[in-house]
Length: 368
Image 1 (cartoon, rainbow, N blue to C red):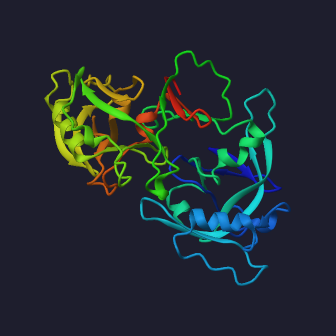
Image 2: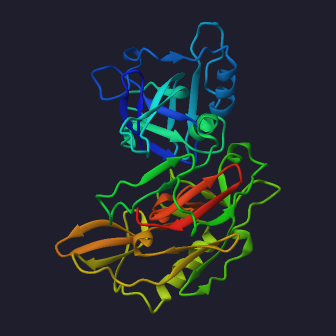
Image 3: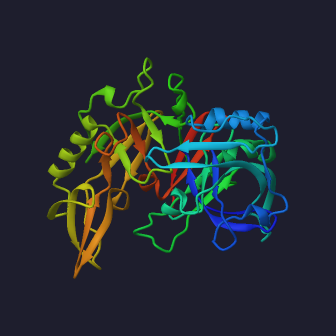
């Protein structure tokens, strides 16, 4: 998403992450294309003795934040992400600017938004090709939570294009009510994980089955359920994860059924490539081959139909052939543990609406 920050409205490209809480911005000197706090007249550091800092360190500290020994000292934070990346810096407040969907071309400003000012000029935000991460989970420090009193609630929605197949599309995100017709939106309830505090703010949904060519796969019910005693398992919606991961029981059943389908137009299997287990060569410039019908079913009879654009990612090209790989992975093999994660690649070309007040999330097929 695009946002402006500071009195000079420094425009940044940031990652929308429903799997994290804090808003982070890469800070640095004026010689680098990042946000410079010294250039903003409205920027201020959060004091380490403040209640906000206490809340910040309770929610974000991984144990390495400095204790407050000086009342004038800045509030520091230390964050770890699921991909083993870390971010440290000062927690601060400033004005942010967001584009409006009304006829006005002017951005709307929101004062005193709390965010982490990341110190390292070559930190993990730069590694990710972004200058910011905007946390959208259910925590109090996420952007929807911070703006809910000003927007009349913490509802938000987005629609991502399928980037490899729609390279010119940009997608859209709405904070507050989108104002779009929702006659075809199907809602599934959001579930709670009260056992594991680190995951209690995530968006859990009830994945109930996976089907290929209309046949429900024989996957143990335990593969999808959240364990009420340990807080492990379950299924999380995460816009900050690219490709969907499912636990091994579901992954093995899905791979086998997909390979056995007689509806597949994929013939030239080339094995593993680029970290993916199942890859194929297809002809460049031709129509996309037929693939098995794949459906993810969620509670309340919500069904996500996965098309070629959701199932395959191009990884290389040579001559007249493009190598594409099945874009659903094993949770355990990719370091996610025993949890299912619905990533943004499989959410593409769906309008996804998070209705926190009513504890539900909606899906509608769309052309993003």
